[in-house]
Amino acid sequence: MVTVTPITRNMSLSDSVMMHLRDYFSAHQGTLPPAGVYDRILAEVERPLIEICLDACHGNQIKAAELLGINRNTLRKKIRLLGIAVKRTRSDTSLQQAA
Image 1: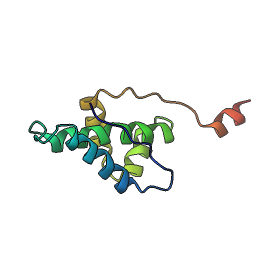
Image 2: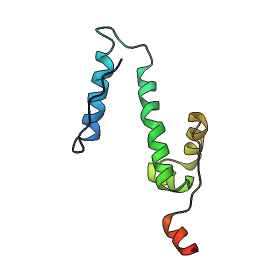
Image 3: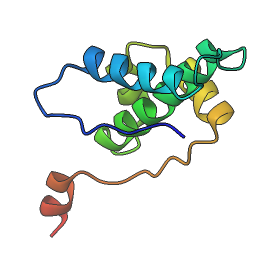
Image 4: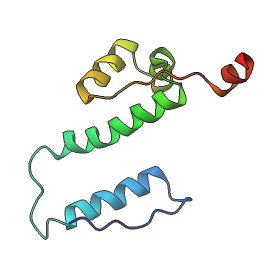
C-alpha cells in the first residue's frame, strides 16, 4: 500500500509528483513495480488534467484543447479513450445574464 503524505500548498507540482513517485516505488519494498510504469503514471496525470480543464472551460472542448495546448481532435480522442464524461455547463456570468 502506498503511504500518502500530506501535500503543502507551497510545494511545487514537480516536488509533489516526485514525492508520490518515491512513495510508489518504495511501496514495492525493494522490487521494481510492474512494467509499463510510464504509461500508468501519464494516464493518472492526464485524466485529472483533462477533467479539470474541461470543468474550467465549462465543457467547451475547443477552449479546453486551447488551454491544454493540444488539437481539439486530440482532446476528443483522449476523452474517448479515457472514458471521460463531458458535461457542458454555462458559466456563472451566462447564468447571471439569463436571470
